[in-house]
Image (cartoon, rainbow, N blue to C red; front, side, top):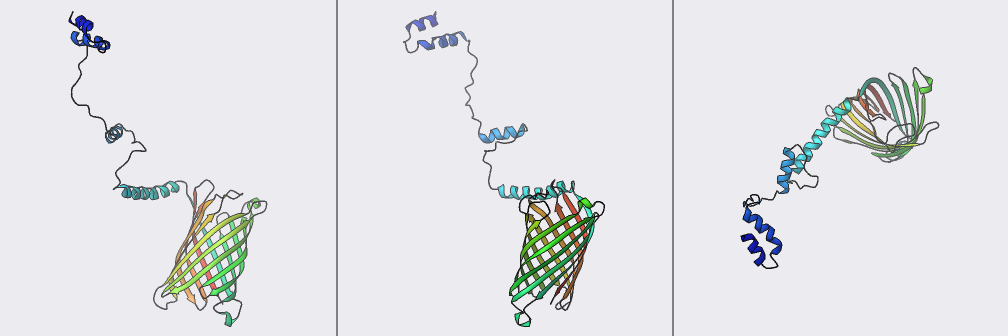
Length: 295
């Protein structure tokens, strides 16, 4: 009766709420807590997702003070995990490498520090599957006692042991800039090289090579030194014969250098890491003997 009386006497603006008043008077509404409602913050929601095994939102802002440390840690883990992953796909082999490099001044004694120069390097490499040779002549110009520019040609044949169809005849045009100098007991050399590679019935391929050397005398004026050098190869685009673009190979040498007059001999260990078309690596553990002669 009370609810009916209120419904008949209340103002027209409150009549739509009459059913609600009748429910209150009859006790039909559920209990409503009067405690203040706490709105979940993005941080609380993220914590809940982590607790439930989910990852935070990609757009969620994180504290920045630890970010450099976390990035460094991520790169550290990546540098360890990447070689470990590559190791599972790596094959190893051993080879014997020998080379001779000759440089000559063509302008006589009066052109000792500048003028025309000649270059020739010869290589013989014996691997488990065959033999590789290199004949690489060049002509250049010496701008100073430490800087020279060369351009030349290279013939690089490969002869397979078991199948002549696997033989490869590669021809190259190449250019290089050579910086070499001595700083106390140290012999320094930097040599960028650009190659244009030609094979029968294949497209021309382009490759960059960066070579760096550091030899250190064992004592002042000693004929014996520790010799180390590294050379990185970068293929400019995938070749038509299947070599992948980007990193191609790396060569790291560690040995001894023995100098007699203008002749320097360097025997030692040469590690070669070659990237294959499937992104796996072939690692070569080679004994190398290199001779250098300037006149």
